[in-house]
Length: 255
Image 1 (cartoon, rainbow, N blue to C red):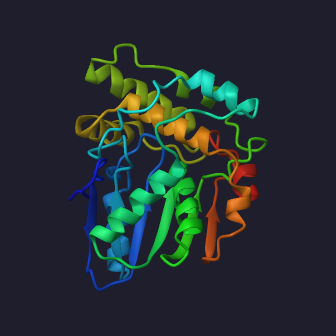
Image 2 (cartoon, rainbow, N blue to C red; image 1 turned 135 degrees about the horizontal axis):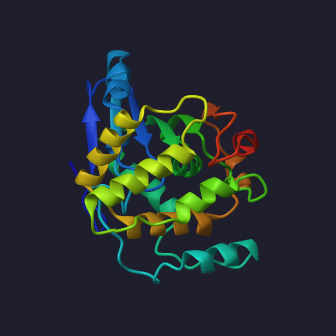
Image 3 (tube, one colour; image 1 turned 180 degrees about the vertical axis):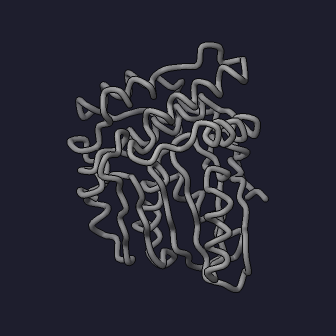
């Protein structure tokens, strides 16, 4: 299913519409299918209606082609200097996409759960739509505080790397498997065969590297959200891995 409008959002609804709703929001460049089916089914069996969505510029949702041409390194430099970052959209627009999905399903209020960038979107949603956020769960995410949000050098390098041949599906899959091997849990690595199968499923469904860059620009342009987070009234749970190489534990503690 998709919302209407200039940037339609792809979404799925699982379970009984009469049950309390949980909206699952994935991270940078990830798709709704990145939420494991078994996890979603367990939530349904627990008595919840589960809604998962593709963020704009990922999966089967609309692509945002307007605005300035993405210049990631320039944006990172501007952010470090405290200068404004030009971008086609921000996290506030992406939080608005979550609201549009809820509107399409006639859901007045929901428990919002986000991972990484999805956690940032969920935070902004809880702050800007307080009457609609029954609770907030922010997983492996950050407050936008630049002093505590920097990834490890190795994680940063692998994120900036590109596939050997972007036009070859197998090359893209190999690149993403290597990337997730670096940014994944050090203590609980996913078996490579399982990881490769999951990555291949996503690549065959959609692969939008330019969209991922625009999403990252949206994160950079949205800046420090600490003042905004102080306004959140919804019951909130922060979950963060102690050895996260991509988003340090300090970022979760700061949130």
